[in-house]
Length: 281
Image (tube, rainbow, N blue to C red; front, side, top):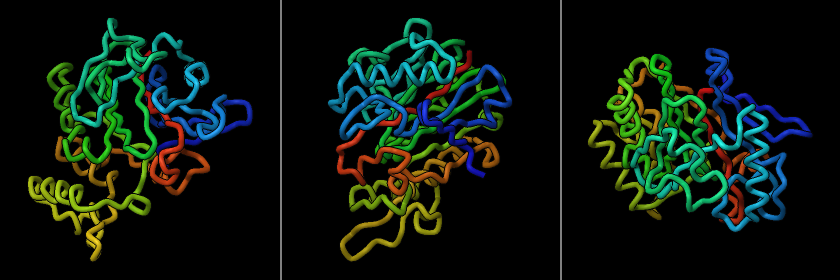
């Protein structure tokens, strides 16, 4: 069953909710935005969440405010990281609350994963094919988001996030929940030598055959392979100690479903950004 439940009405922004997580905790909100129901125009039409893609800032901020309102949170709680395609993890406390909500330069600098155990801090990250990773420690009421492109994936950002939550909050990996959200799938993601080499090195580290595990398809004579970043991140989450039954995995491909999502690769970079979010009220 698809873990991200699509909520789509003519008058509201398109949302994909981690509804089972939310049923288990009425104070938790977690999900992913689609591309419809906003105010952006032209190539960003219409629910663009990214301030860094040359859209009108007032339209992006308007879209973000629509999402905050739709999920019942204040816009002041909206908290973002800079996202530099790395694997650093930062904590978002009361001091960082609201960072990056209306100004990209004000986002939490230098990191691609953010975590908090502070009620009322809404963690948000942005995507247009990269993999959104969600983490929820029910025991300690701590949450995290990680942005995993191919660089973050091979840098094991999932492991770094779990370890940071262990050190800061006492999180037990075997007890926590994780989810992998809408992102590009192997059907739409072809990569070449440098990416393949890094993934093979990661496979060697973990004792995993990238071909047998479906990380990679057989390399063509042109030196290219189809890459499954979702499955790679799922395997990394398990290596970090998260139980397979505790990992939700979406079937949505942003490349195949440009009717629902933005895709940087399929739309040749001329597109907007979706947002992942998680927070405990």
